[in-house]
Image (cartoon, rainbow, N blue to C red; front, top):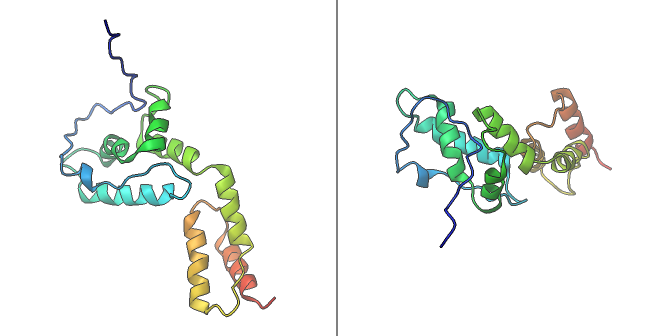
Length: 162
């Protein structure tokens, strides 16, 4: 005799609104595996862009995001989601916060902030290439917390000859 199949309750508490997920939506969603090389901020942005494109009828966009986001997670990321305390996620904001806390940890933030604040131009690098590389660093860490004047100062100092 086999033990009964039991599944843990979901960590997501769905709102009382109803939402029918159209089958054609799921294959359009990009996936996130939880690898160090993946950018969780970019994943959320691209996911939200898809959701905004296909918002269904009168359902709230947050409900759509809550329902669809688990379909974007694979491997380590899916294991993480399934390990969250049952019924602990009530809003899209809650889910984003937990996701970013896990997949964009403090050490990653600190490393990117150092990369921004210690920026320097490479030898023989064209100005526009230097600027694009600096903007990539800033965009990789949208929660860097630096004021605009400080970002400009870091860039200017980094462009000065050594």
